[in-house]
Length: 232
Image (cartoon, rainbow, N blue to C red; front, top):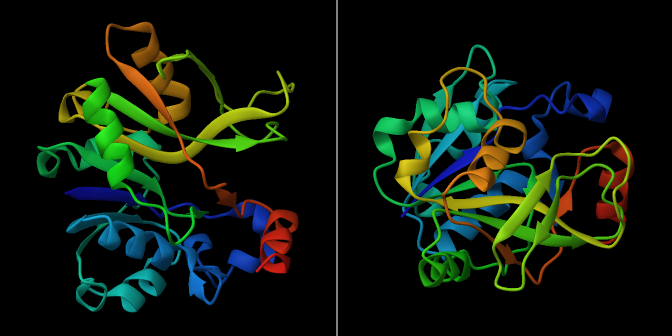
């Protein structure tokens, strides 16, 4: 299996913390978040990983090199200009000829989270695009999901200006998708939350949400990072 891990963002809301450290390289439980995600991939049977780079790319590439020490093959895609979450995937189209994962490299999902569960769910539902969902009380900074009883996604609102509801399921930052979806992504800067997922839901594609038992841990702000560190 293959995975695309998104690791190019600057993490501007973290201020001085990310001036010398890429956001995905911030440590949780003694390891960079990106390392936790690579190990999650390895332990779940992913053999080849594509990582996009932009902010402080050498820090990431020097640390992981070709991935051999983690038991995977790592390929890097440097973006001189950010392409967005979906634009990155589109730029790797020629390598993504089988169903694959997309993982937000600056989210921590827990060392015991098995991606095979998502793959199995995806295949059972005959899904074209499966989004992993996490439960969250405060949804003001997250994409929120309306889901049916059988798991199909009815609507998706990316980071609503006004809180639509509390105690909701949110976009956890892991997708498993069929290669045909990549054909629907426009070239250039494109975002899954704003540009791709709403269009898929409104189309004839099968879009499902997998409810993870773990709570995803974002580190988007110094406050969230502090909460994460204090809970380790």
